[in-house]
Amino acid sequence: MNDVQSSPVEQRLLNLLGGTLLSLAEAMGRVVILTRQTLYWLKSAERRTVYEQVVAMGVDSVPVTTLTSLFTGMVLALQTGFSFRKVFNEPIYVGTVVGLSLVKELGPVLTAVVVAGRVGAAIAAELGTMKVTEQIDALYTLGTNPVKYLSVPRFIACVLSIPLLTVMAIFTGILGGMVIAVYRLAIPMTVYMNEIKGIGWKECAHGVIKSFFFAAIIVVISCYKGFTCEGGAEGVGKATTSAVVISMVLVLVFDYFLSAILVSFGIG
Amino acid sequence: MIRMEDVHKAFGSNHVLRGCTLDVEDGETLTVIGGSGTGKSVTLKLMLGLLKPDSGRILVDGNDIAQMDEEHLSQVQKNFSYVFQGGALFDSMTVGENVAFGLQQLGQHTPDEVNVIVKEKLSLVGLQGIEFLKPSELSGGMRKRVAIARSIAMSPKYLFYDEPTTGLNPIMSDVINDLIIDLHKKLGQTGVVITHDMNSAYKISSRIAMLYQGRIVQVDTPEKIKNSTDPIVHQFVTGSAQGPIQMQLRAHG
Image (cartoon, rainbow over all chains, first blue to last red; front, side):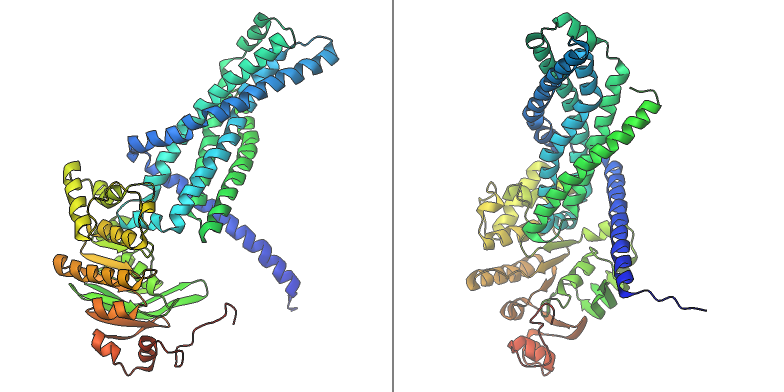
């Protein structure tokens, strides 16, 4: 029988690969546990803390979300108008393109990305600071479950706020598109509005359903990064950065899979 | 009474506790001394149930908390209160809200009763009328006293202090020492303190336990620890660089 000995280089490579896979699997497991615990404590949320979080996450995100979606709608109408004019000699279907893009994709995704940057960073930094200054341990010793006290209100607030912000972003984007369509591309308002009215409830549901999942992704990843933060100010910085990056990437990845699933169920 | 029996605890390859056995009698203030990284904080967190031992038993009033499920453990933990090294005050809340937090979560008192208790506990630690300040507006010593007030607000049976005098000037350290003694007299709680400040340990303790390489090497009254013939204890309490305890001076020595 031949003994197969691996070389040190092979061992190091295997260690690197195996170690990365193991830590990834562990992190995924912990995220699932945190999600389960958050859902378990969902009913015990205090109305006052949820309200405070809705204000901090939702209401305070209104200006940035409005501005982003307004200009996105405007540029979308402009590009569609000029491109279609080149192809068809007429700026046709501007309302349909702007409306469908915003309702199904840009509304939910852009809102999620903007909120991930604003709210995800705030959650990870706040919980991370609480972790490194032992405030999370202090909650335990004062008879309070940190998931129940910190994660649950943020989860509820995020899942309530982001779909509402998404709906608002869609309306603002369509409005921005309309301004450009009417005043820059000389499309009659009734034509634009008739195309928008042609968008069915299934398309709307498609966008809004996705935004619920995006909200859950952002809040769970950010809370997880905050709770597992280690190593002082540097650790808080790293946790914040990775919370934003991971939740943005996951939003985009899940966007594809959620869209595929929803379309296969005939929604949108 | 808290009893640790042959407790082992390792973090990866770092074997922190190697058969730690220690009794904390009711009503006493026991201080655990030892160098950095010898497992003092781990010992305290094991007693509190924040960590689980790899082997051994931790009995709190006769019940092994290492084997308990979350629900029973949280019942036992209601008897505990912990004063963190940095205070760990919630900086989004005022001092008053911090002290009231545990009571509010317990939900057994009306808001008026909570206010009375908060005022009473703050005056016990010598800080009347600062309920509306934020923790960031307080000095280090005041933060520590607020942390103590927050801990005693729940009227715990066992009070744990993690290095209560670290980072304070000598006078403020003595103020905290006096406060711990005074509270112990007034409230009669069982105290467990970890520290490497020997002046504080001599002053506040009923007994002192020396932790070295994951085991308790001696438990005795402050007087006997002061005059101990054990070379390890003697070196530590006299603060000598020469002796059996070799401090690691480099990270990768």
